[in-house]
Image 1 (cartoon, rainbow, N blue to C red):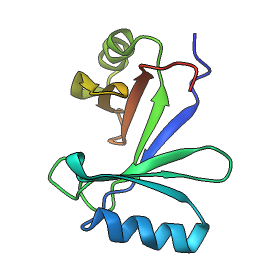
Image 2: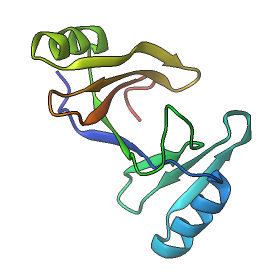
Image 3: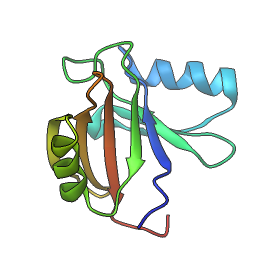
Image 4: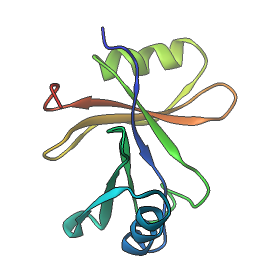
Length: 121
């Protein structure tokens, strides 16, 4: 079983490149723009990271999304339901990166699960 570490944090942005520049200038984060996805990845000095998705109904401003490592997203989402939570987004592939699923806990907090295609990364 994975250590259940936080593996990715998404901060919605109206302009993903401008948001990346803001945080790079503020914190010294390294950036990688992914124009095809209108997405900018960030990496902090300790190796942690995340991205800036475009603000949308699915990614509203002010709703930072935390991704937790999962060895079995389907099983975790099944447990979310069993424990009184709600599945927001069933397991889906993030092409070239891995798989994700999004859920809401019984309090209403929204979190995500992530499994990498390259577990050694």
